[in-house]
Image (cartoon, rainbow, N blue to C red; front, side, top):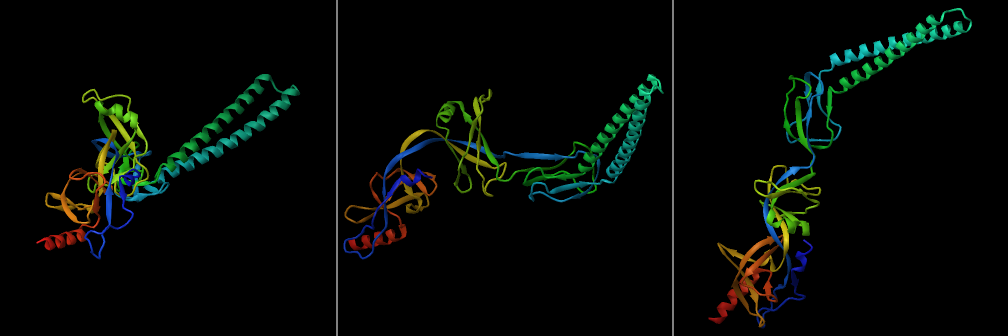
Length: 346
């Protein structure tokens, strides 16, 4: 868009369009400028961050808190699985750990007594070795009980499924009351605003894209463009159609774009001189396009033109105009004066 501001030089003042007329008409003076030469290909919008949440434990679903098109903040509870069985397993693990700790304490005391007695030659070396082995076994049982408790805590935590990042739900795979197994899909979503466009660029122009590293994404419904951030060119070509996969990262976008949408990608492959005009100056009737030209003597003439592509609020003029011509920006007022001029000449 920064280049588009240079395409036309607005006149500093208002030009009179009929000698002696009291009204004035705002105009724009055309100028040819260097514009990027582009090659257009189809592209598909896709999410840069998309994931399908899966069940980590088996059980019956108690509640599902979100549905398709709902926005979920990071950390919010998406789904709950019945946790009665997993709470019972955790209580058993806690009890086993308490028992292991008590046994370890007894083994430590017994080993301490054995050490004292051994120094006094009141027990055999074999008895001391047995007490030391019992201590090590008690320590191992405590470690095992701690691991079982950690596992029980993890299994219990898995009964509550939380959103790993903020995003939008695009598919819900389960309903409340269903039983799920580990690995079964639960919900699919993507991070809103983190989008990219995937396209395929022909081998014949991939060299120009590598050189210029510039492209535009154009919406099909209204012709508006979206700024492109990083451009990633895959280092290999498709052996079937000899095109290169290309990804174009988009900045934080609004609600105009959604994954799966078809868009146009304008890839810069060079430059050329073009004549552009503000869209508001163009008069379109059926298939006829024209502009009101302000001649050097101030008279108004209607001239047919052939428009090309649009660039934001500007339209390219392929034929019918030259550089350094004055064009009326208000076709309605210019049309009134043009009719008045025709009536005066009769």
